[in-house]
Image 1 (cartoon, rainbow, N blue to C red):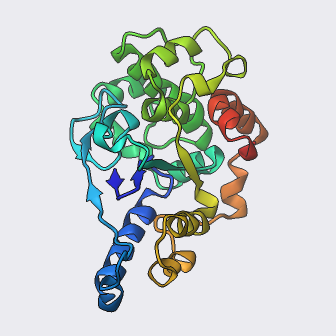
Image 2 (spheres, helix red, strand yellow):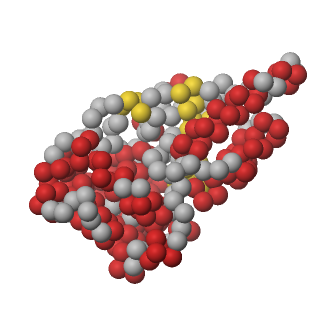
Image 3 (cartoon, helix red, strand yellow):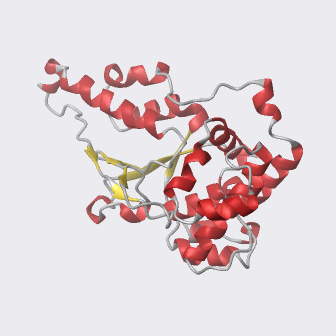
Length: 268
């Protein structure tokens, strides 16, 4: 989590958080070395505060501090009219493809208590699993463990990305998860359950981050580099890569991540 004079940045994992994190520090450096600008009355500075928090959205992960803080972890003094809460969202299809491409899932059994033992039964060849096994079997096993840790009945109604999103931005995450066990996303007025957050889209992150900072009063000479900056840890698309996403898996993701597709319908 990064907090400036007027923005609270919440970094949802695997959406472009590293790019944004680094860009803000480059902007701060650009202003610091612009000595003539800093002498001007009313010069727009970038007072950047970094907050690290214990992971609260995955209960079985070791309690290590990281920069992926949730809305509930924002210090109260910054939840005022002077600060806008901003985060980044990524196309759920691309998010899953990227996680599989980089093998993010392979290290999780070492981090999450009990996950390795459960995977032995559901995926005996793990970590050698297909994309379909990752989407259907792996995520189901992971969520079963999470639901059990919170003593919530597991009905396999939502996907991992929606589960993560709920813990980041829902007013009452566990209560809302229970509500989804008995209600369809389409029937709910989601604005009643989530905090107001401004989202930047990963596929257009350079432009949207630049426009956000420009809107907040930062000088073009300090932020213009963002428009052409290269994103890190971005998998290049290929025909073979895209072919993993079969119609069966597209429909499965559409069903399990219905929450995200309702909130961000342009990704459907």
